[in-house]
Image 1 (tube, rainbow, N blue to C red):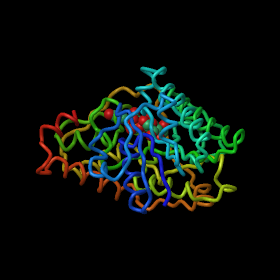
Image 2 (cartoon, rainbow, N blue to C red; image 1 turned 60 degrees about the vertical axis):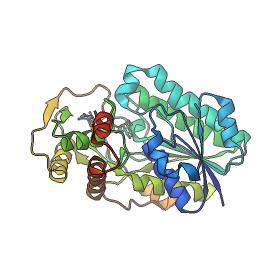
Image 3 (tube, rainbow, N blue to C red; image 1 turned 45 degrees about the vertical axis):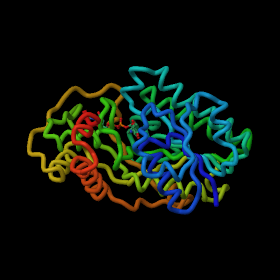
Length: 328
Ligand code: UD1
């Protein structure tokens, strides 16, 4: 039985990983400072995991958390391109300094492998699509720079100390439990929750920007594969994690209207600073070296996600007010 440390375990990706690791019969330890994560995301598994509420910027706490660990799944981050534009210092601390602490602690604890939640934002605006890992990165926002810097740290720790690291460039992960309630929330969580409440969503720009939206189960599968892929194929490397298809926001909003039953209009607002126009992944490398293939298509993922948000609104044990407030 292996022990996995999941940083950011109370987040929507971290908590999904925790459930998957438990399901395969392994042990889970989690660390989270609950700044963007929520305890309710791990509520149903809290008695089966070793949860430590702590900040990754405290090296001692990370060192304690790494003791006896086989694999680290480093998911903790402060996401959002606009949030990083507003507060680049905060973004750098959470997305770079914290990563260096995780790497130092993992190295000293002789962890077998660290898998990192890198970001497709590292590519920035490239004229070529799909985006493949050998392309020179071209980050636009502070968030993208921070995520890329942490990737470089991953590779550096492999090269300098022999710590096995794998960076997974996530392409717009979405699914159940993604927080819809912040101005910085991902567009799908936000639009679904707005449409279900009968509120008008706003597309920022002309809606022709496109994303390779990726359902959470695909990201979970990629992490588990990344832990087990042979070191000579995976260690010190970067891999795309995506669906391999892109949808623009106009067509996405139409799909969501059908799934949510929203019959109102969709507004248009000013394009966001630091926004990438198009995003689409080449999955050749992840398939060849990790054995990764997306299992859940975008439309199916959207359907499951909308169902989950609908259930949250009607579940008898969840007060409707609580959902309204957290979704606000
Ligand atoms: C970026 C990364 C993604 C990462 C995420 C973390 C890229 C291509 N993707 O996502 O991998 O996981 O940061 O935060 O860099 N939008 C609206 N209306 C809204 C909100 C957003 O139209 O109310 C638009 C945005 O302008 C953007 C698109 O929706 O064009 C997606 O935005 P968002 O969900 O915030 O994610 P990215 O910034 O693309």
